[in-house]
Length: 363
Image (cartoon, rainbow, N blue to C red; front, top):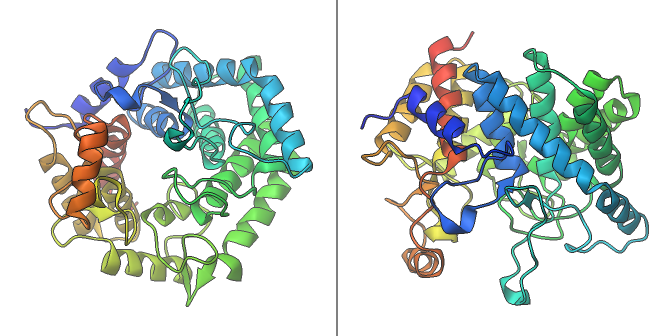
């Protein structure tokens, strides 16, 4: 089966549960949760494809879920104020598909990192985009957005796990970018001046010397490597323009250090998750950036590579493992969790987005 954008849209819409949630994967046993980050991209892709009703249903699921956990937001904010932040008290990045918190593991060594601030910024960003496209902003969505704004104003710059659920205890550049974009867009949507002011302050922090080195953005202070998630600073978040010199230098580093010739994009040098493979979603992000910069050939090449990576059933994996950094760790993860998650709905969401970007060109 040839992968088409309509196939990816059908997979996204078909994966939505009766509650409105969307799992990270419909098939992979470990990924049977609703991540705010993954789901934000899926809802955004559904909106891009004109499926506003399904996108709205996902946003309403998020809103109901978060309002049901409003007391937990209060506890998390108090933990930040008193310097008592732990993964157990801070708001989780994922919920069960019916809107509950995941049961904690009995084995601490197997605890799956769940405290990530970026996912809440992602949701505010995606919600504001949905409303800008004509989606209904009802009382439930407004109340949930207010709740998340209040949380991010307190906790949005707190050291946590990054968007890859790694590197705890750091303030990650792409996480700050997600928080800033979410506060900015939701603040404008709701007329929330403190959120807008906080977004400006965080953006200044991201673009300042703390998160740059040698004229390029870095993963987080103290880590000089570049990360594929830094592409999001320009698109979709718009904290910088694609022509910004620091961003251009960052893209150059990503191309030199993370792009596999003729292939996709790795997360970062030294990645060992499933061997440190090429990620579908990052290939789409790079294609999006380059198309916006006028390099439509790279955008088209990334789209072709993504579609060629689909299974015979037209499903996209999380990663492509043709050129791994660590064959040993590829075998480790396969023994632990099985084959890479296929389909990964975030991969299909980015396929939809890049297809739309390539169709419209750099305009």
